[in-house]
Amino acid sequence: GAVVSQHPSWVICKSGTSVKIECRSLDFQATTMFWYRQFPKQSLMLMATSNEGSKATYEQGVEKDKFLINHASLTLSTLTVTSAHPEDSSFYICSARVWTGERQPQHFGDGTRLSIL
Amino acid sequence: AQKITQTQPGMFVQEKEAVTLDCTYDTSDQSYGLFWYKQPSSGEMIFLIYQGSYDEQNATEGRYSLNFQKARKSANLVISASQLGDSAMYFCAMRTGGYQKVTFGIGTKLQVIP
Image 1 (cartoon, chains in turn cyan, purple):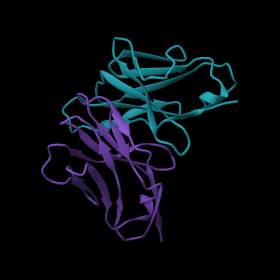
Image 2 (cartoon, rainbow over the protein chains, first blue to last red; image 1 turned 60 degrees about the horizontal axis):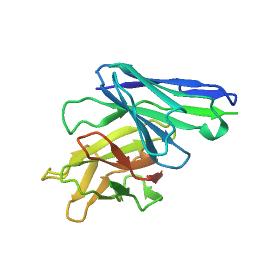
Image 3 (tube, chains in turn purple, cyan; image 1 turned 180 degrees about the horizontal axis):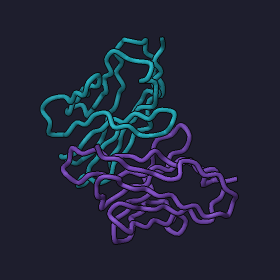
Image 4 (tube, one colour; image 1 turned 180 degrees about the vertical axis):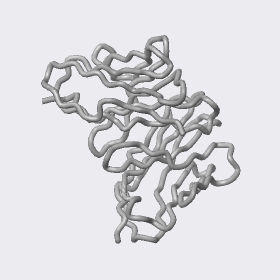
């Protein structure tokens, strides 16, 4: 079945560092990928929709300059958390969907746990 | 606006028993899809089952079934013969708007007791 790979799984870094997270669709092409953020014991909140070859669409309240998204190919989207601070610590998870009909679910990566010290 | 409501923060079920996780939704769209995902403590999101708004029959996938009541806007997940490995967070989700955005509920934490 469709597989989405996300890397890295864990990141611990100092405040002020920029962190890049990769999301790859391994056996299908994904013109659209989604980036979510999940705080402990909370639901997934959509941050942005990543569109191949064009600008990402950000949800209300998400800082575009803080969370840079690049979708350079049909199999790769990256999320860069720029100048990360402790409040950016969270679980980030991406998803993609095989565009073959409405019944197809979004397939998720395994997520990235980001801890900013 | 789309909204998913899960009113059960936590549920306990005895091993081998069945359990129902509640989900209600709100949308003005006529066409939509409803999903259930399982999230173990490791964090990955595992797709369980899908129900389309025009599906006439309730969806079933192995031990999972979806009790879809369109008029009441509910899409409850039923897990039969619970197993210890079923202990996890369960999220109800809805996709509308041209099959793009997915809105998630706040989740229900299920714990299966031996």
